[in-house]
Length: 251
Image (tube, rainbow, N blue to C red; front, side):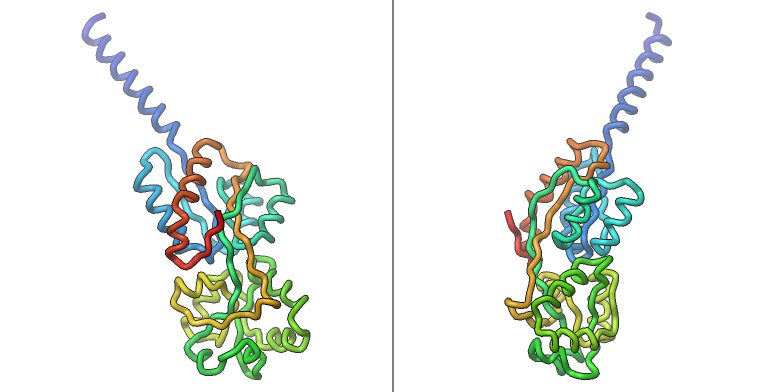
C-alpha cells in the first residue's frame, strides 16, 4: 500500500470511529414535578459532569403538565410525578415500562409574610378575607390531593378554605412565587418544598392529610433502555441529595 492509500485508510478509520462515538452519545430527558426541581438539578449537574458520553436533561413543571407533554409528543425517558395519582394516569395510558418508589411528600400550607400575622393554626385558614393559593387538579398533584382532602375535612372548614381561594396555580413553582411576593397569605405546598425555600408553614391535621408517595418511572418512548437505566440508577444512588434538601426518601 502506498503512502497516500495508507493515509486515506487511516482517515477513513478515524471518521468511522468518530461517527461511532457520536452515535453512542444519548440525551436522556427526565420529566419531574416542579416541587422537586432544586435537588433534581443538583443530581443532573453531577451526572453530566461525570458522564461525557451521555447527557441528562431536566424538564420541570406540574405533574399533569409534564404528562400531557410526554403523551402528546411521544417522547421522554424518565417520569417523576409529585404523587402516585399522575403515575397511575400514566400507567393507564400505557406509556410506562416500570417504576419504583423514591420519596414521600407531605402537604402543608405555606405562609407568606402577611400570612404569618394572620394564620397560626389550620382553622385560621377559614378566616374571612384570607387569600389562599390552591392547585389545579388537572395539572398538579397537590390540586388532586386537596380534592381528596375534601372527603375527610369537615364540610364547613373545607368550604371556607375553598371560598378563600384567590389563585388556582398550574404548578407548585407558581404557588411559591405567590407566597414569596406576598400576593397570597397561604398556599398549599409540600413540607420539603417549604424547607428548601425557607417558607414557614402550618401542618394539616394528620387525620385530614394525605402524604403522597413519589415514584420514578421509565417511559416506553426511551430509545436506549441501558442508558436510561444507568441514569435512573444514578438518581437512586444519589437520593441523599434529596434528603439534604428536606425530602423524606423511601428506599
